[in-house]
Image (cartoon, rainbow, N blue to C red; front, side):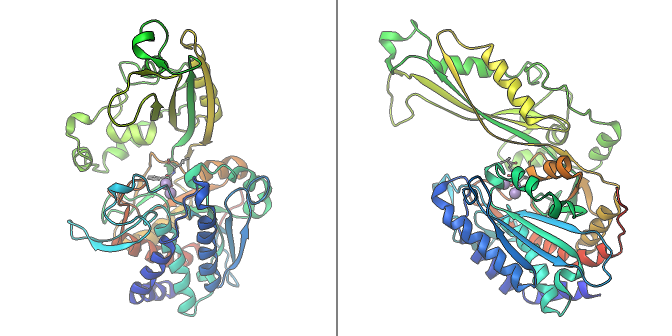
Length: 478
Ligand code: BES
Ligand code: MN
Ligand code: MN
């Protein structure tokens, strides 16, 4: 089997591959901060060159309006070997990363990748993007390289379109337009494959079949036309920080349910079968809590749902930031002229981000504190997606993953969001298969992000085996 040969090649050439990944990680492709615009483009170029070396036909596509105002998309294609009748795969990943802040908490600089052995004895690569998502995309890139180096057909003979986005971490704001404008090319694909999720634990591979959606908003509460002395004015007029805190505190009831009317209307209920299956996965709540510094008493959330059910099946409202007044060193007595909060909602199928955003703004408007005025900002949103688990394509990917891991993969969901999945389902009726290799302790989005080499190895082996596994699948037209 040539997939096995490609997998062996990966094992034999691992140090070179890891050096290549380090090169990519050295490029600070922070998509949310315009200061990194050129770096983001360099990271796109890097991936494009890698794919070209593996025999793909590659284009760098501009995004945004005007064109080029967004970050580029890397689009690469492999035609499929003669006689390939398996599904046309759309492999999606993102090459942008989250900002590295707060900088002082990194043990080594975020864009100077370090290979180290953790206290648990596991080898790992530490850098921003090591896991999310460059490290995971790289497992696919190296599998493609391995097929080429071992004399196989491009992409192992699989018919594949590769789409690497540069704006996932900043809300995929230009992706919807891109998908709409490239409906023909993308619609020709049968299924999307993504490595940007996690496993159940070390040595516990998993296929994810659901991601949550997102509505990200910001509220600014404007009050007086100037900052005020808190002795002269406190208690006489509304303090926007006090008032904002009082409004936000009304977002949850005593059962920790979101109080916005209609918020749960479109939530698909959690079925008994699903619940039973999740209970059998053996998720260790106390261990998960202990790893982030909590005791068992921190297992709190919406009444009636377990730890894992709250992440995989229920929507949430979260304050992500509160800004206002004096935040410098020492104490200053002041009533500021405005206060600000960043509030996001994680959504589940079939909630609609735009509907939720409007409901929230209406809810806040009804609670406008006396004398004050709201400013509402809509940052971005993304649809939730629950995908089919009964397709032959998913079974084939699961087999390849199982073979690479030497153990049967579990079926799980995640609380995170990957906007393209819901978009592809809505615009093109396309299903997604999430085969991810991250671990809960990878510190994605946080300082000291890491990716275990064992996870990288599993990813690369899996992607080496997928082309042959898919070649035997026949897609029935919908
Ligand atoms: N890869 C993550 C999503 C993820 C996180 C999946 C953890 C599984 C486990 C992705 O890059 C991400 O962070 N997405 C953002 C999307 C948002 C900016 C719309 C998220 O979930 O916050
Ligand atoms: Mn990601
Ligand atoms: Mn991310």
